[in-house]
Length: 369
Image (tube, rainbow, N blue to C red):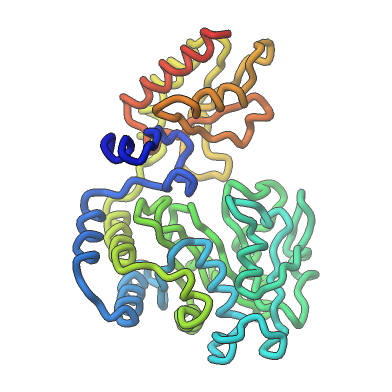
């Protein structure tokens, strides 16, 4: 690791931010890496591999079918395109042509139209869709979604993420009821979610996951759900999906990651709390900082260290964040509430030695004050 960093002039990174695309998402296990190596040194008929891997994953996840994609974002794009085109070959070649179909509106709760690293509405537009927002930034009910549905509605997109507004939003189950009432497919973007069964069992037609986040697989995405819709998604690989194709190494790497995930599962909240306790105590002992343990705002079984920078200091949270990132190793954290003086440390990919490095660096930064 150090050798390649030196060769390319790269900093080492301590990832206390979580499973974030900007940092390469996750570390893969030896088993996943071995599968990627085997795949990279082999040949496959790629069309067969995509169908067979999808069928195998679908059996594991007890759904009709699945399609492995290059990312969760690609999953959104291809799902929207598939539902617009409905398997029409002409649409594959002319996905944005008004004459092919004018049924393109995707209803999205306003509080779900977020920037997760790229705008949700841009992914919908790449698939040929037009966003129709339902409700308001602070509230969206089932009736708001009903009011947004027209004869041009092709799908409802529900984004399950910590990025979205959490209060006063309809649930996935409520969205399913509306989708069934109007005969409109429901897509759930569950990119970083850890439950691979809940949303299809709740009645969602398509569910999208990131392969590299909770699953700790390689860069990849996964769409599961109704077979007809998955067939339409697969057809899009002859068109716009060509620019989003995934290699054989990552297809089979994700299959191995899913197998391991179903067997072993992610680190649970209890384990995180045990590892966090001494870390939080050390953070809290640093002059100018107050630390506590908090649960994930979106309700997942994830616990983090939350640090509040004393407002009386000449340094604020943003300056602390910049100082952490400027070192080598560069320390990255969750910075969504930095404007409120808050920094969060996600330890899922952080070991004890790295925690000690974080403490030492924070002591240096705060001592300068």
